[in-house]
Image (cartoon, rainbow, N blue to C red; front, side, top):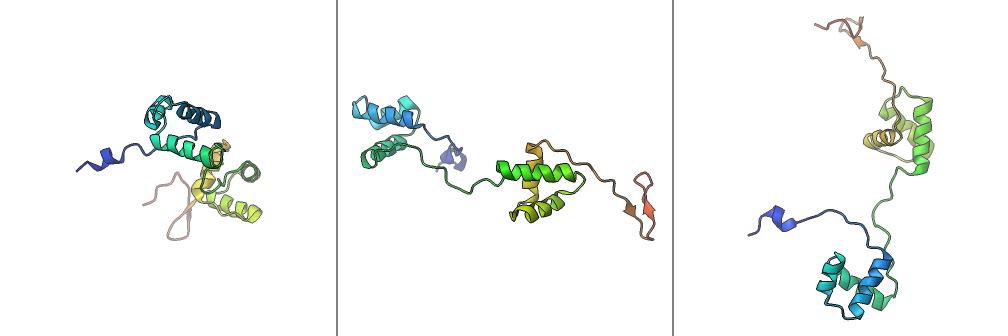
Length: 148
């Protein structure tokens, strides 16, 4: 039995092969420059990809890469502009408060981590509030006083 990590291999995402390279792959196969496996090695793609490009060229004639699947990103240019305005106008709020204001303006719910990522992308620094601790008797303590 093969260990799991060796069996899985590389699971990283790769970029789509451009239309021009796909056309060159199909042309190389049509000219008989080698088998699908040999052409895959030449162009540094998988044999399955070569076979898919050949099939797609024969059936549709269009080798344009498909649009990536998945959910569209929430941090679009427009949304980043809204977040930038929020942070610039009120730079002492918490991430949760920014989330709430962003939702009120756009009707899009985002996670606190997404709000943090947006602030990082925009290089927006938030002002830190100075919190006052309250003792059990209701007396306010400074940050400098020790709590027993």
